[in-house]
Image 1: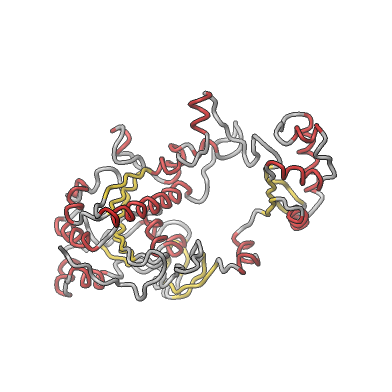
Image 2: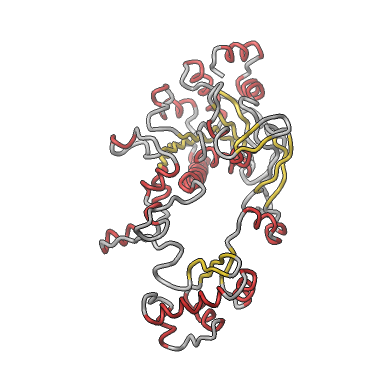
Length: 414
């Protein structure tokens, strides 16, 4: 049995301390799951392609460093706390190096089309032989099995939203086209699903001594968040259609125009009566009681017009203050500038600074969420250049010396 090497983390912290994860995904879904684990104290080794790296490094909106580097802002925000190495897992020697790392890990997360790693000789059976306790989490667009016509298809965020049913429900009513949810909601939903399922299987492995394989498709991660949409179809044969920001079942629940911007107001159940009182209406009157859920009734239409007129006469700040004083849910629709300047964000230290090694300077963005009372997460370093930790990881876990590493680098294996 291979002895487990000591952690490379400079200090142990967070609820996931002691958990070691190998991450081999690209773009957002799987790598974000690994990055979330790293923020909570897991030791994450992220593997990229030699010479190329993850395309996510250079896509999107870029920010510049003091050293001339230009990096995707999403990469800077989400690739923190991780050790980055390069490895061609499709090469024979690369496969053997990967299998050398497997016994050191608790979880392996990857994202690719079904069968990709099988074709490289890294099928589940081979990996589990190398480490029977490891959890293997496959993240793909359409899953590892199912209709063969789908398994080889490419998928990105908007594809997942469309195929998984989210996009059909998002946006304004026909004839306007459906809209994708920004930013990258299918990817981020898949990431959260990847992390919780991997940790659930890890807990099982700690209890039983047996690892297992998780098959997570992006579209199913989205599909399970559609509420009662599918029950409604199977049981009643009715389709839920797009309604924009407005709820089709109750009011108020929409975005409303004030003098200087937009506010969102939502009242559910008995809270509706408080809105009536703010507007000078009697919530006990039958017309207004009916208006709460019968949006197209005469009372429903009149209530909506009265509320919109009331909001239009006031500033966003005035509406927010009056509604919240009445214990009603109401918020401005905030931009990045608004959130950066908001006193509640500041009081909760939502935004923090950290040193980014790739840019050669400090950057500021979102900190660790959620907050733990006893084992808080932390950011101990930012993103790093491609292959930054090759020497550290390969020498520490596999005992490779400088000569061997130089040869592997020359051969394009790392």
